[in-house]
Length: 259
Image 1: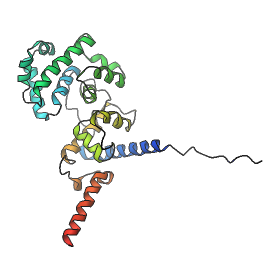
Image 2: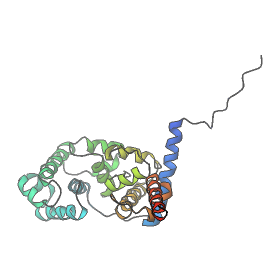
Image 3: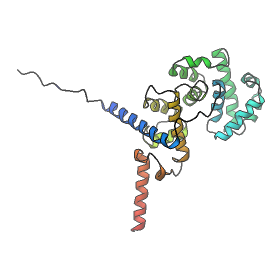
Image 4: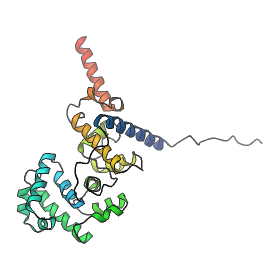
């Protein structure tokens, strides 16, 4: 009996792996295209110690940058250090951050988070996280109630720690959904791990910061929440949402011209 034919399967990948590879290539293409538009490397917008970055991030949730920036400056002007903020009456903290969204929730939350940091770390100093792998550092932060994936990534990436963590804000998330990098039902929290997995594992802090910034800037300047400027989009050919919108608009124009 002749031997069974050899089936060569080296180039046959599981469907899930093929999908992951396709999305990784797309994520890299979008990154490169948007870097050309917005100019990478992008300078860091903060140079804060990690605890100050933590306070800044907690203030920024669902709040415009200008308002959260004013609130942060008000806290820094009023208190000599973050220990003094912990000891302050919560009502005073709330009054100082009145311009942010939900100051009545954020004032006690910031104080509680800072107390938890002090209790777990022994002081209000998070510099030790620099020596840890990013997943472990994020897990340590997220074990504190009130700190989620966006805040933990922001503390590691935006602060002087300059660690390779990928934050995802609402603008970044919107662009990722419309371009098909994540599904339409994937929320901001779970999106962090998915979007990070699509990027090269050896990317340094600057590269991941650039990726966040270019997708965020694109969401702010082109891929608007309402009426995105698809006609001016540098990644339109990579965006199924934009292509669908452009096709629908072309169809409406054709009907208008030829009723």
